[in-house]
Length: 386
Length: 64
Image (cartoon, rainbow over all chains, first blue to last red; front, side, top):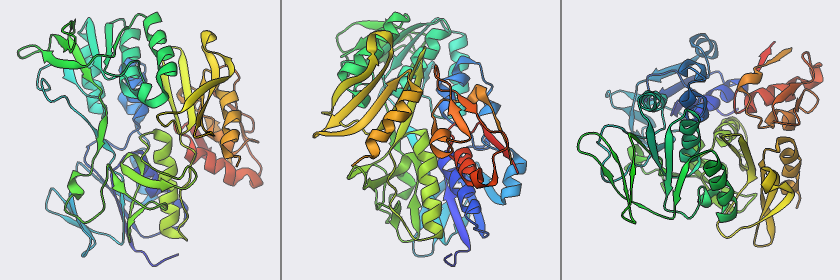
């Protein structure tokens, strides 16, 4: 094991916490400091747009670990602490409080921040959804509302629309793309997701952009680019996110839509990145990627911890992700680049139970299952064959 | 080692089955975890720990 006394992890969510735990499991007995800008103990985000929004889980249930576990792990938690910069020469992280936290190895796991619309964001009733506080604010707003417009039909927007509809609200799902989730899975599969939402009573308005949000102090609706308006008591803006790297801009750490790393998740010597914020070269698919999904946060953090403690190895995962919307559990392994060809390999989309294969440049690069978890796990093996 | 699972939080990712197929399986209909072995033999401990770490819903609990 290299001579390392102090590891500092900035970002106290899934990737940051998994880094700390994996270092301990790997035998590291030096100092670990986990810095997070939220005041809550580290918690899990996927339930926020599902169980927490629906009210079936109280927010406490999303906490990863209790206080005692952090003490047992001997992890120094600095919550409510915002990192403002890194000094690579002095090897220290600056905090908003004025403190400087020295490190021998630094792991950046600051995740992403939701994008906002340029206009109308200050109106009451306009929400984003990233943190547990965001989820509780949205949940409270939905409880007093009859209609909600969701701007953006990606993972988050589609899931939140399904949750709001399940709660009984009138829901309109808006996206500039021709169908929901087309950027993620292409137009044909996205069309089926649109059908799922329509069948459950969501008004799906795709292929049309947003002109502006309406209202003086409180939002009253959304004006679309075709001139029509959608009345809404609540608007959720789910138009994507941007890596939380603003604090690194003058640090000298390479940034390109995320922290730019090599295939071992190292950005510069002694500095690594993991989770939503990390862009690295995945040698398995021979592409640079940045993955905003829960499984990657765990896998990449485990890889970073191993690479800090031992011989660095390339991180070559088959990305896995899932989404739950109404009765659909959609799971996917691999990559789904634009221009891929989708074919149904098993089952039938009409039954909402099927496996789809995605080919790109003649290679099978992704498999997707719709309510077929066991079969999808078997299909994953196809991606590991050369 | 004793293994317990919180079925209610399971998201059906199947990562546990990939890591430790002798200890975990998934239900046919919804992919929810099925615990095959509550007290895995020592040669399965590493794989079981790996499964617990990989679980994206953190529903696998180990008492060692």
